[in-house]
Image (cartoon, rainbow over all chains, first blue to last red; front, side, top):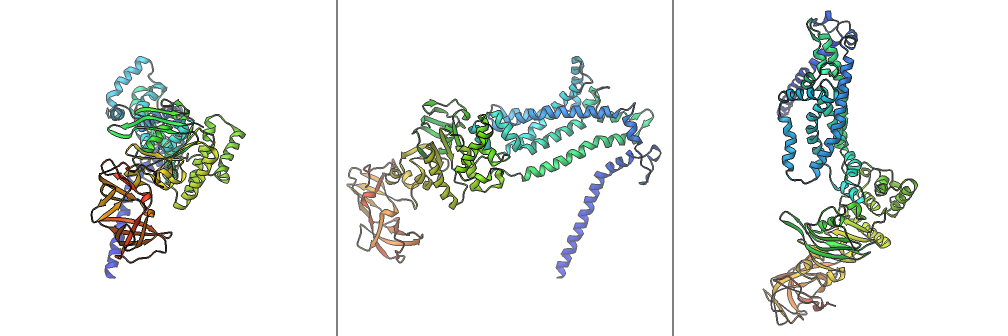
Length: 279
Length: 356
């Protein structure tokens, strides 16, 4: 009896330690976001005040959308670049991943590895060649240049991810469709894609996020017209100092799609796991 | 409707030979069962007919036309898969109608054909469900309906009953047989279950290690197995096989087993086969062989009597009222007209005369 009580006390103590540790981690992760959220609604005079209670204002958001910051344009640029990148890379990656998943080919392993190997090269190494390339093509400061570069970053990743999803799908339904009269492409569109749809959505979301947050190439390859949101934020570091309240407001703006997309991922992951196979 | 022919077909994966130089002619409208243990090449053979595997060498003909280079969709076949291969994101109706959709059959005509096919397999009121909402037996019916919805020239069925429970298997088996008879479509059916093969087939091809060991009607396969493999594979409980020596029309085995066969010409090591139902247990001294009771098992419809005759252990099927003490001495009578004698070296059958 005494032993039991002791064991229970120890268990509860451990639970308490566990909870405390979790709270600490949670705090470390969430505090910067909370601080950013608070800062975004503060007037410049309240900025370095540690109080949680202040008069909230939307002035910061009005400022960043107005001249000369025009953050709306950079938001749109980001949306266009990320959207087009996903739109091109997902169908292409799906076909590539399907080929790697289903077909035998010479040097398959080496080819598949090569796709990933492109990612081992640090971005800094290739950013200058890319700059020169796009300068010669007259594509500097265009959406197209950013889409091309982001495709190179995102597609290998998407192929790997999608192949994982495709490998998990049994081939019997595909074979049934082929016997029923479908061409290979028809099988992919009618049968394969619907069956791995949660995986496609999750991959698309990850690709969108990668592109959305891409900084280095956007910084080097754009100047005025095609500036994306992460680069746009750096403009708030002015000769008058860092405009923290504006940085925070733009930070909120850049995070909004992430909040939305993470909820999409969550939903599809759950559905993907409970969807159930055929048998 | 069409006949199907395999001409010297071989399928090899690296060093592994799945099907070895096999030829097989399936007649128009015939129900052909490919029977064998797992890994014997029966599914590979079917998948080559379907076009899902390419033969390494040899030709496949459907309706007299060489189809080696045709993709599955151009072979005018329908296939039922072991785990059904349904389209999980489509309703039952869309699953059944998919082959029609691919052929551009639209609207009312498609609906009518879907309904007709669903009615044939008694699925009428489930057309709006998704496959995951169905039981195993219902999914099986969807797969069948999808196969029959357009009249293909050949049906291919790959162990379609193996995922069903025992009771459902018996009733679905009869339905498949009825359906095939009604539609008269050439059917190739793969199974490892000898009962399915015996009950369904017009002819059975018994396969092992990539080769067809015997191709004949179920009756002949059962009554005159061509070799030791077929003899041991078909029948439940399996045929009694006694290894010994044969000469001058007499078969002997260690421990005093001695039996006069009617096969005169063979001398050498041999295996004697006799099915449990062809062994009669008689009172001691009243038969061909003396034996002692090893075990008595009541199965319900019969009693399986295991006896020791010399060093050989035999199973006899007796009437379900038959009883005896373990260890008691009895005599065995073997039906001499239904004996099977095999060459121990080549495993081939030695007595070719039809036992009647």
